[in-house]
Length: 345
Image (cartoon, rainbow, N blue to C red; front, side, top):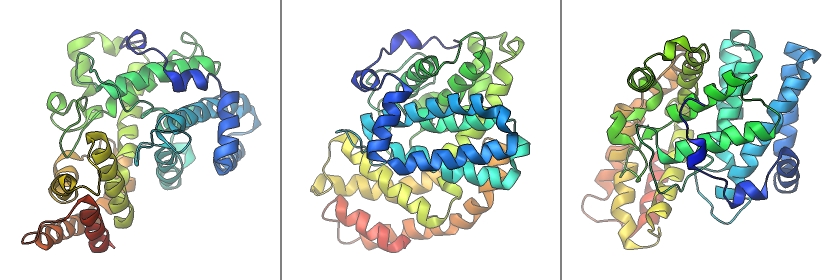
């Protein structure tokens, strides 16, 4: 489509193991049948609102959602052997159930057409599909995001979407996932693209980048609606800043655990103490006050009040954590996480 990433990232073992919606449904039914129950409740809620004529649209979107969730669960979640504490099938539900649900309740289903709601849910399922890509792509999009785009387009193909007839959906998914590239708030991983975008979500900077790479992009009728969804998707992805402080702290701990795992440091080793302390103190302040910005009016309306309420506690907990270990260095990462958890509780 517009970025041309598909040929750069071929299918891996997880993609080959779950080639279609039927295989995904079987895996989820065996591992997390509650997800199927949730998906059915959500489908019924949308049917009640939009009418039975929406059934084919909902069914196809549900298939794509399940395939994305199952692939992530197998690759980096509890369905497989390479568990990531944050980027797993639980994060899909954080966005698709908790945060998208909050948005639906706040602005009402009538605020967006059905396909936009479904596209946001597909973003939840697919934006973090790949987490271990060793190489970047030219431009500001991270390697993980570019690979996730490539796989997402194949998921849409596998679930009966057409790249010509449904081009607006394909373009929207490209823009949304590209826009989720984020400047990481601790030591950047190799493909974080932080330097290229100056921190924060790329979604806010996509028009400027498109001006440089696709100067006639405004003539493409699919791109402007996709950019709007990209800004909203970025706010859903980083809405932990505006959730309850307990949820914000929990996400910070999971990200910390995953970051240390990705860096090859065991949490019970002394070498993990300093980076965990930096991540959960200075790193949290950097993310919250410097990197995070709302990208959409809707996102700020729903999650902005929560962020304002969290601000003093982020500063207070970060300061208290630094004070606790000012004289006696923590033994290891576990000690830092335990102290942070007590202070945030």
